[in-house]
Image (cartoon, rainbow, N blue to C red; front, side, top):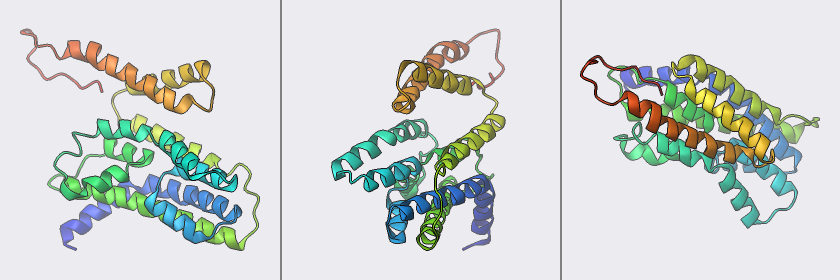
Length: 246
């Protein structure tokens, strides 16, 4: 590895520190739950490498413990992770020209990695593809390490695991606060909160996540077409660059 690559990897490591401190305990929580359900730590390793979806893996533990069929498992996992398709659509420009790492970047696009990729600037003169790959791979590695560690500990210890899944919500809150302070735009946060509250009022809590994403996306699309569209219309009296609202 060249000196430039080492510097870029270290820069990506510093960027992913919040995810490190979130994924290790969160992954451990998943591993502990999986071990508590009677599964070998190898399952935690395989699931974290090839499935790599925090909320989906937590729910998978419950489905496996309940003896769910393969089709039920696949259906629930697809519904839970459908939001990632929205993430991917919003990153089409960022992922343009990244070459052969693009399939992995798409696979490793978790909520937390998305938050980092949308708020972090690639170091000047560095390879965008390599920087994004380092961020995605480091986050993936943290999750694998945490889940395997938790599964191994869970196989050796008898613990009360009640309330352990709360760490997932806690990590989302921390990343949202960081993204709020890192961004100049405030409307996406208002849209997200509004969509969440509206979904909670109109639908059941079990279905509000996906529906709030759909509502929030609709609000942002309408915002882009109206407010931002008007601002981007050419004006002879204003030749200065306009400030980005989103």
